[in-house]
Image (tube, rainbow, N blue to C red; front, side, top):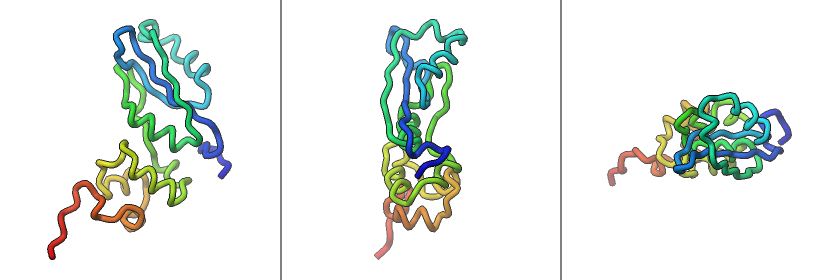
Length: 139
């Protein structure tokens, strides 16, 4: 799919660390040099001693990795898949995202709300027994 969401583009998740290894900032972008230049005026940027970058095919895979990295000490979003991104994803991509460590502990209802996907669709893609808070079924 070719669109503004970036399914057909290479995305990068970058993590900026201080000398002690503390995560200062994590984000995703299609251009690490551009984002680094945008961070440069920030007061915290002078503490950056190391930047790690990973490459992903498609925005949604980068969003999962960004969420898994978590926010740094000086910001960055929690990352993850939002409603507009989820709306552009096919069922196979949504299913893969639901099983990713970044979302494995989210309830089906929480995923439905966060992604703007009907609860029926979520349950179709991830059955209730896979829901981390699902109640055991009685025999």
